[in-house]
Image (tube, rainbow over all chains, first blue to last red; front, side, top):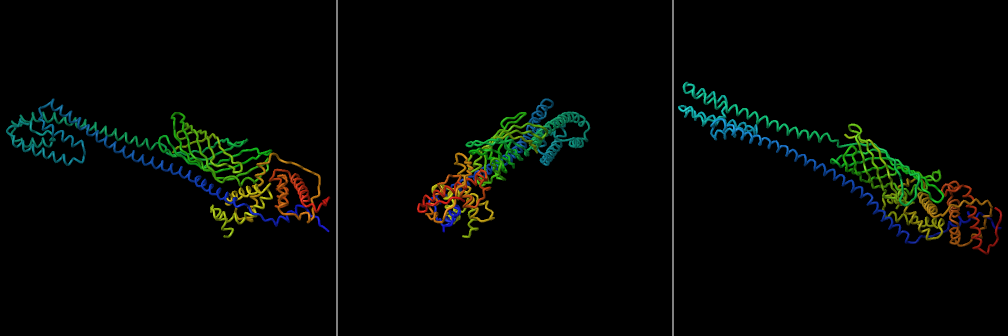
Length: 406
Length: 183
């Protein structure tokens, strides 16, 4: 008697003996695809590495340039201070010569020696020893001259007027023996010396004050520059949130409200260019319709944006252009089919992704160090969010944040 | 190479290990693909896609449960995904007519290729439900969730698939013209 059995069980039992092998070409194609994917994976990691290296190189270059600029500024400021000193010396020399010409018949040698001394005094304090030596020289000369010319005391034209009061005292002491001559000599000598001395002192004071003022001004300017440089806030931190419209270039989607929130750290590389890195959470939420079913997908990524921001317009509200890339790491994904959770397609969602970011930035000062920032951004994802759909996806977002500079 | 080492090497995208893994499981998965597909060409396409997906997702395999079970599930999912992509509309047939789906052993005494062809010729949704329930031990609840149909539809589809198979198989074996009615 034949035994009846369910056809399903019968087929299952029979198929256990089925032996089949696929065509060799299947592996050839798999192998080719795997090699292609390897190349793509290599590029996927190569691109951000190149981007990061370029940013680091840029930072390094900017820093090096700044150092060079600071050294140059220092050199320029030193040169200008020296220039100021020299100019003062020259002007003093000219004035002094003029005044001498007008007032007395002081010979050119005397003027020359005075200007030399003046120069020496103004140029550097380190030259004091030299000055002293030269003064002594003059003193010695004067004394010898005096000794030789005691009978002709009126002939004072050969005197060196640089001698100070103590020298005059010496002069007085040496001539104390002859009172009549002394009386004649003293007024003439004292007249000339006192006028010249006064002029000298006045000029010295004037020259000193001018040079000091100018040096001080220069120093102040340098100081102010350095202070100003320090005041510029190099770093800033910006917590932000954005509302994103998620879309696909080759698949119709709906209910595309997505959110993105995080924090960005910026470094002001130059006056107008800032580099920034951040960390954010990107929650994509969208529904696609396949046949009669609605597939609602909730995909959450950790986003690491690397961006360059270039200010193009200054004003109450600064305008900038932004370009960069974001590295995306899958956090979690859920797919619902008409409300029922379905883990079927999750395996086809990429674990990592990248996006190219382009946008505009507007910022305005709210408080002392606090700026309000508004940035409309466009982000195009390099890889499809789902291999199953091969979707070319993008996000359009409006980012709002508060930037604190420090 | 041990399976565990093979999996580790595949996680590092070692092409040789991937080739070895393919050689180890290609026949098992190919038979699975044949049952879920309309023909051998489609089965080979599915096999290709399945292995690509296996190598892409192998990092997600945590070693819990059988590896063979895991790769079979991926292969079945690939077949279902392909069906979902291609189907023009969803079939929601709740046929209450109860047909006899029993056969004798002699009825099934035909070539294995013929039995396979009969399965492949089933309408897509029937074939999927029959394979999932009858050959791969999925419950109607699981099938309903996977195919986005109701449990009753799944049951009905299964019954209808069996009826069609019986009809085809008995036609292929004319020496046994007797049909059994009643379940």
